[in-house]
Amino acid sequence: MKKFLVSFLVLGIFVLYSILLRHKLPVFSKPSSLTSASVSSKNQTTATSSSIPSNSSTTSSSPVASSPPKSLGQYKDGTFNGSVANAYWGNVQVAAVVSGGKITHVKVLQYPNSHPASVYINQQVMPYLQQETIKSQNANIQVISGATFSSEAFIQSLSSALKHAKA
Amino acid sequence: MKKTALIMGMPITVEIASELHEALDAIDQTFIYFKEIDKRFSTYKKNSEISKMNAGLDRLKWSKDMVEVMNLCQETKTETNGYFDILHNNQLDPSGLVKGWAIYKASKRLVSNFSNFYIEAGGDIQVFGYNNQNLPWNIGIRNPFNIDEIVKVVGLSNAGIATSGNYIRGTHVYNPITKKSIKNPVSLTVIGPDIYQADRFATAAYAMGLDGIKYIEGQPDLEGYMIDKNGLATKTSNFERYVI
Image 1: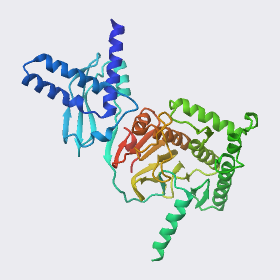
Image 2: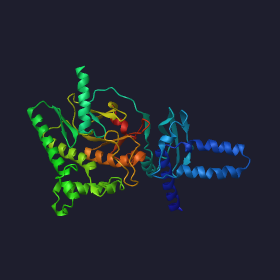
Image 3: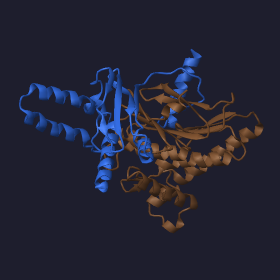
Image 4: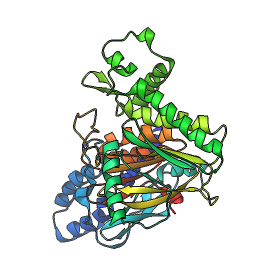
């Protein structure tokens, strides 16, 4: 029984981890759509069966086929709380902060922190990626990192710069 | 003291926060070292050791440096689940690792005499110590859509930073698993404990496409900044600690 619970927990953590990293909001919006479906639809089985494919598409993570840009801008601005999930040693709940259609922050509202193992696991699971739109910066810098500048490109750029310097 | 030279087909810059005459000598010695590396590892030079290897040079005749680089390439391939691969069209091309490795080696030679400097080769940088104002070296991340601009500034000391992308030399990085060239993201910058680590993982993670930033997130000593084709950047959870 304990083994089963542990393996279930590990599976749950992977699912949560992949959801956090994928920035897929469906997990946050799903409860509301499910609720509305079950309210509007008199046939409970329709709502249940429709939840299965959407659930599997949320949790399946194919490492090769990923297309985050397609989902850009589909989110509404605001802070969206996720549902509370039982993680065996306690509950986990996160909120997604969406600004400009992009997830800018994922807040951890609650997580199990009483058991040493769960604290350790949370440290592994909770890292998340953040997004922002790039903006040109004006700053005093010593050196630039970028994709390899070939000698030819460097000379070209340098000579154009020197032309400007002359004008 | 700062000097730039064109070696290995790219500009290489060394700056030492010192006005001593010895600093200039050390910079020139560093350039000589890079020229030696180029002679051995350039796939463009017919007489380089790597070209001879591709023409069938016996394994027993490989130099010590070459054996080291080949072992590191194999190690990196394993660590990145095959995404770092130096075999293209049946020819060995370790340049995805040699640049970072060479900068790292060159910086190790310099650090015995100087504590505040950086070495930059083709956009990959190793920094040690502090700049002339006694602050971490300020490093800009180039805008892949406009090479005259920078989009981020990070302050680094005793670290390496490398950017992989397809925006300057045209499409030249591809996914070794699917054999398709990488069109998205347009650039991936990796900060690591040294330039050897930053460069090899930037190369490998870039080949993973948009999933590369997740790979970097999973490495405890690496941080990353990925820019996709829409100009949207994704950063790892602790990247901000370097941002100025």
